[in-house]
Image 1 (tube, rainbow, N blue to C red):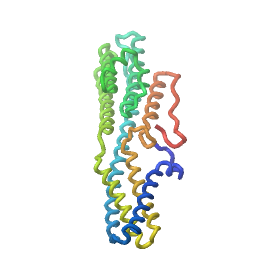
Image 2: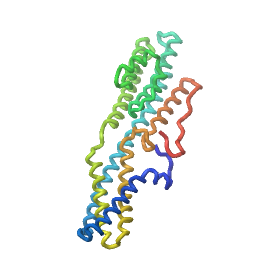
Image 3: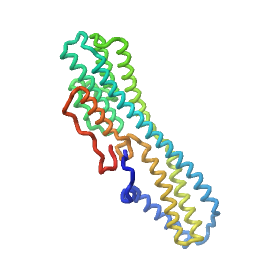
Image 4: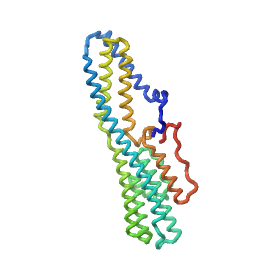
Length: 303
């Protein structure tokens, strides 16, 4: 996620230079063809690019609105996951009693449930990004790792462990029925967060909108260059490039937000959020050896 409040010119050039170069080439070719290959053969009315530009603005606006909605929904989901994770640990530490378990067993179960949840967060992050780093495995025993990796959906398998441990607490009278329902509602909330994230990840934005938006931008650039070539000559290349740059960059900004779980500067900072949850929960159980928070890269963005 980008955290810098301003962008340097170098950063803009670095991210858009390919599109800039291609637009300049298209405008130059269009001008040369119009002037020297089929000179003055096509006389387009000014109204054509005006109407096309207006329609194109609606296309770009729609794409960008939908892209931001996907990004913001993903951020809301993971913000809620942070809150529910803290609540999960607090419930375990404060609302569960020893029951019929020994002190050692009770303390072990509490730490195990909190550690497993940290592993759930990291496993969900790996699942959404499609680039597993296996970091989640350090929060489970070898037997538990073998159990959860037997399923294709590892985060879902970890939630099953949550339910088993919760039932164990209930069987040993560590929690009463009312608190059991509270714990179970949190597991349901984790399932909802996981499902909503997977829905965003697996739902492809309609390709037809992206394709035709890009096509219409190129058509507009060509038409504008042709029309202006008749009045301002070679300067039509520059004006056509400026117009194409504005529309393409506007469209590109939306496309960068389209996949909020990708490991990119514009994606949701899953690394930072997961590490925040890990630090918070470890400190809640009294751990002093906690990892450092994720720091911004070049002061511009966090992953």
